[in-house]
Structures are given as structure tokens and as C-alpha cells.
Image (tube, rainbow, N blue to C red):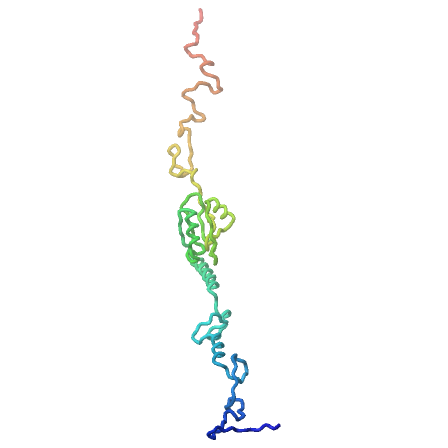
Amino acid sequence: MATKRIKLKNANGDYLEPYTTNVPEATTSAKGIVQLEATPTANSTKGLTSGGAKTALDNKLDKTATAAKATADASGNNIVDTYATKTALSAVETTANTAKSIAEGRARAVSFESYSALVTALNAAANTDYKVGDNIFIQAKEVPDLWVYSVETTTTSYSYTTDDALISALEAGAVQVGYYKIAAMETGKVDLTGYVPTTRKVNNKALSADISLTYSDVGALAANGTAAKATADASGNNIASTYATKAEIITYEEMA
């Protein structure tokens, strides 16, 4: 059966054109029937509902918003290839400061009353408070002074127990306290308890130079001298029991 085009009229004689004419589909250049869809589809010629548009836009970043993640900056430069991280810059700064200190020959010095006070301070210190080569002097006696061996990028807390425990660890190598590895100075402290000052004198002779003592310095008899008093002769014979006094010698006269 052939398709026929018909027009209907109402009671007033008006044609019901929109309902009776075969209207073509709409295009970009002509009006027509438009079919709607709720989800945006690539290369589709259908119209998008406002609900579909809102759903699609809700998942997009506003033009004034800040992206949470991106692989490039606003100019299109690749972020990883173009920029350095703060961690990398911190390591470069530490290396540069170390080189600067060595080049300038500058080494700062700090002092602490004890190893315990030192450990407490270094555990709480930032990694910029001290530099490689800084000297650490300890007021307490008989413990070695220290120096900053290296500055690390991560902190490690050290638990102080005793001076001997820390000294034992230092003898094995550098010890990390906070951000800092510390080592004992090669010129350690010398225990002077058994030493005497050079101003001390022996028989009124100062110890600032070599001392030569003679028999007179100590009230002794010279090796070839004659004793004023003795109880024995040179051979060790007791004088009193070996010899007679002149008073004990018998005198005699020759008879004519």
C-alpha cells in the first residue's frame, strides 16, 4: 500500500500541520525532529538532556579550580622532568653547605655539659642547626669531644643510657643522633690525674727542664769522700769490735 500524505482540519478549518506532516530529523542546517539522550556520546547527533549535561559537568574541573594531580604545568612543561623535589634540593643544599664550610675552612664549635645533654639537644634539632665539620666540646672530663661527621635527610632518635655505652658505640664508628652522625675527635682528652705541673720542684729544682742531682743536693757522701762518722770500715768490719783505741794500747819501756 502506497504511503499517502494527509492533512487534518479542525472545526475552524485550520490544518493540524505539526501533527500530520512527516517532519524530517533535525540537522545542523535544518530544523526537524530531535531525539534526546541522557549520556554524552562521541559523534552522536542526538540532543543531550540538561540532566545528562549536569552529570557530565559534575565530573569536570572548573576552569578556576586547582587540579589535585597533573603531569604538566600551565605552560605544558612535564613536571617530573622540569622541576626538582624539595627532598632533592635539601640534599643539594646539605652538600653545598658542606663544600662551602670546607672551602672557607669554617667549623663552628658548640659545647654541652655532658653526653646526656648533647643527645637531648641533637634529637630535637632540625637538620639545618649544625653543619658537617662542626666541633662539639663536652665539659665533662675523661670523655672524648666530638664532631659532626654527616647530616642525614631522615632523623633517627638515639636513646642515651650511659657515657660508656656511647663511647663504645663511637669506637665502632659514627653514631647517628637525630639528623646528625657524630664521631669522636682523634685528639681525645688526656687524663692528667697522674701528672704533675711543670712548676712542681724536686729538691728546689723546677720540673720545667732536666734535673741533675749531686750528692750535696741530697746530703749524701761523695763516692770518693771520707765519712765523718761510721760504724764499720771500708771492708765492712765493725769498728768498735775490730779495732782498739789508742787509750787501750799497752805502753812499754826497754830495759837497760
